[in-house]
Length: 310
Image (tube, rainbow, N blue to C red):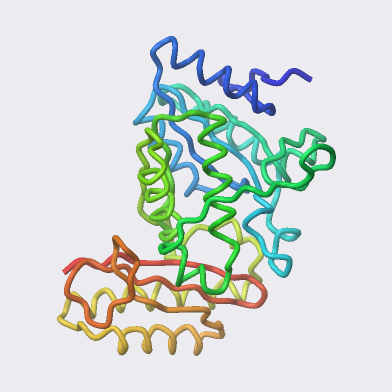
């Protein structure tokens, strides 16, 4: 099979790192800008919003599919993470043919690509010269706290694989969703510190009609857990309204959100209010903050957040 194929609507499918670089460089040589949307597959409408933004900001959009083993600890859900390469490809072909600018390039990597025997290794161990992957990128301060507290290897895996994607795709713009708020801030800082010439864009959280933040993991929830999980967005909205009405004590706000989620049947990993820029914990709200929550419903861990500005 060729490294790049023409899909529906003129969409290219690329499964080789060298071919991806050649494709990107040829488009740039012709004068076209490039935007990247990194994903782990199992696409939903939240991903579509990222692609549409990418199309607005560059002539060509590249969507990467890579379930990154480097960001999962041995006890985490790599094996059960939703993966559907065929459905993902069909989805992009449908969305890519929508009336808009150029349809996205779809590059498959890692776990999803392995389903077709087309593995493009990023951080997996490999035999032969050099053996396994041993080079990692750490954004040392911003990776502490929030998700970094309970997932200590998570952000080194994210930062490393995103840097590798930058070197493979060579984009001018990268678009992330701010549901993963800490991740977005970490990538912005990495780009600044390592002098990548890339504009890092963050889009607001995309929600289902009932308010649940869109996530690939939502499909793993039972109907009961799905209903219980609404307590996250509902309690965050109430907290935001409370601040708008004059509440500034973080302890009271965090206790209220934790209680609401627990009463609904969830188990709170963290409920924290931090500075929007440096992610430092605040005790009283006097400047723009973000209220971040992670909670378990059954075996599914969900995250959400709301930005609050006075």
